[in-house]
Each structure stands twice: as C-alpha cells, then as structure tokens.
Length: 212
View 1 (cartoon, rainbow, N blue to C red):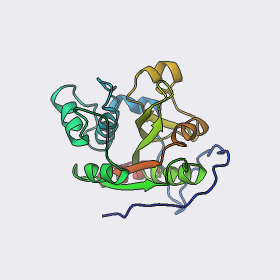
View 2: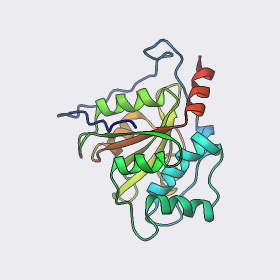
View 3: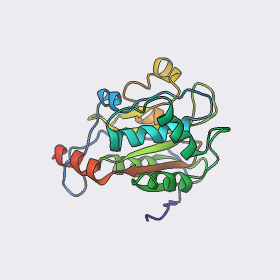
C-alpha cells in the first residue's frame, strides 16, 4: 500500500507550460498520449451525480480493458463502487484510492489541501503521467461551477493534457475533447485539493517500453 502524499504548499504562482522533454529523470523515454486515445476509454456521465464513478470507470477502461464502459450494468457497477447511486461522491482522495485498489489497480492519493493545488502539484502529476500512469482529479466544473471529477489519461508531446470529462457539454463548449493546456487544467484543479493516481503495472510498463 502506498501512503497518502501530503506536500506542503503555501503559494500558487502562475504555472509555466511544461513542454515535456523526451526523457524522464532516469533517462528513459516518457509516455505521451494523443486525443485519439480517448476512443479507447471515453464515456459521458448519464446523470447529474456520477462524475466520480465515470472518471474512475474511464481510468479502469484505459488501464485495464482498453475499451469504454458499456452503459447499463457496467456503468452501474462503477456507480455502486463510488457510492453515488443516490447522491454525489462523499469519499476522500484516499477513499477513492482504496476503491481503485479494489479493482486490482495500484493507486496513490495526492492531497495538497483545498486551494493549494499549484505548480508543485502539476509537477507531481506530470511525473506520474510520464510513467504511463493516469489520474482522477478533483476540479471545478467550468460548465456548472460545481465540484467535479475528471479523468486525466496523460500528456501529448507538447505537454498538453488528454482528459476524459464526464460532462460532455465541456467537450464542445470548452474543447475538453482536445488536448488541454496546462494553465487551464491548473485553474480547474486549483480550488480543489488534489488527485488520485492509479495504474496497472502491465499497461504502464508496456507504454514505457514503447516510448523508449
């Protein structure tokens, strides 16, 4: 079990785009994704309270099954996992990490405290994504202004984020079906408190091998 990470961060200076160098700190290739990868995981939520379940479902689809969830029994199973059949998500980041571990994924919660998600948090996120891992992030929904969850699959070769936003309105209104700039994602994540990284070793290692 990986312990919950709680970095200290007092300020949130303006983030600078990370243009994704070609190698990781260890000198190995880093994993990059493209918007076309969304075809293998994207589902929009089918009600007003299950964004967390759909974000977790997209992570599982991307890391394990390689296909979007089927609406009905499969999507309902993720709603049950998240506990959102009757209301919105009420768990913590560590709760979500444990729920993802129950799917035989490895998971790590990054909790910075509310309002403290800034450049250091984005650096932590990038380091994980570069290893072929992915994340469910707590954000503010630009469509509704409410608390929301999205799936982050990785970054493209220009350092932009490939995401799965369960609120499909945001695909057309805000371009979330296309690579998202670092500044935009940090603005969405900034008022919230963090994200959960999860991965399948087989998938992450395969993606790393292909990136070398």
